[in-house]
Image (cartoon, rainbow, N blue to C red; front, top):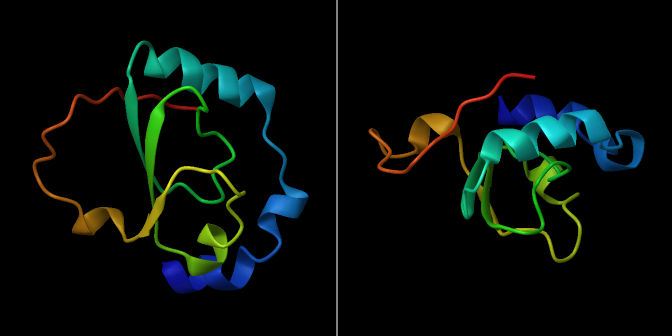
Length: 94
């Protein structure tokens, strides 16, 4: 999958702007969580600024588009994360 977004993700952050409705759904789903593991983080469009965030993204092209000051990003795929993950999680759908 990384190769796909390395190819099609170029320029993503310039073309795609965050949708406030989606941002609100995410904020509501996070509740009072102090830390966030953002898997498939992309360019970081929906990462909360008021929490500790670690981003996991397989695509170098997407990581390079993260703004200055964005959460640290690790190039990896979700399948490489520890299993079971010993963190408190909230699941949400958009």
